Length: 420
Image (cartoon, rainbow, N blue to C red; front, side, top):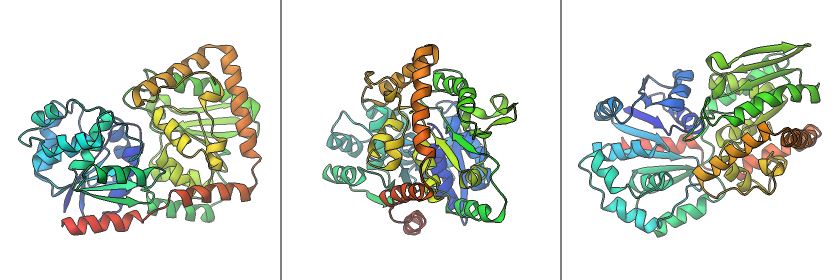
């Protein structure tokens, strides 16, 4: 079976989920298509695919490429890329939508209205489909994709059962399949084995910023968060001598943004790593700070590691921390609200992310606010490093239990068997 695969171009989360799903399907021809940060992640993890097609103008020359690839495919798998689902519907190709943020999507229109729009969708052309759904927000497009896909695979998280019931009440006739963590199981097994086969860790601290780029954030625009991290790193080393070897990894640290800095016997490496190499460091490094994305959190806890959450880059991170507030991870998490407690955050993905960018910028430019940020996060670090091994293991197990679900390999395999 020839499977066309794509991911929402928004950070590394959707692309990492797609890579994990692709690695479950070695007996099929797996073809990735996409752009931006999703394509960057696919290239860094090219062994997960049999072919990678990258485009830079999805609504121009990229459109012809996608149409050709769809025509030659037997099955489509989309990781939260609503547009790929729409294209699959027009091309009359069976499509599976994989969603690790199923409970996150906000909607102004009722789910019944979104379902009605999907039921009356003109399938003659992609422009006609886009005009028909033009009233929907980006979040609502993802929900529409759930109504249109042949199957939906949704990763377990607080609120998933409620959202599934809401779609069913609205008349969703498609199958929604809950699953546990959508992660690279083989890569995680190799990472665990690596910890027993080699010596000590290469680093004392791992800082994972994730892919960072999304609909608003970029490496060279709206990048106050990254500049704040750069300002903070020397102070982190000064405040915490125990962290003498630090690995800072993520999308921002490819090419000229990467490199090594050494001073007074302390070393900071900035790198963008292939996923399986990163997993080995997650398994081996005793302490880690993490931008609170779900895929990276799943990987850490499956490896028995409890990371400390960095402050939020965007609104989805705020949603994650709120949803996990009752866990040890959630209680320890760093939040910009700790630095600016009176700063309101709009309950909207774009506006909320825009507000977080503004907060990071204020802290970056204001020495008093920066000192409060440094002091506040140091308090979090103090709590984190004082945890006993038993407490850390318990915190990781707590998340694994809360986020567990049917095993992804069997769920995916059963869908493709039925479609084949």
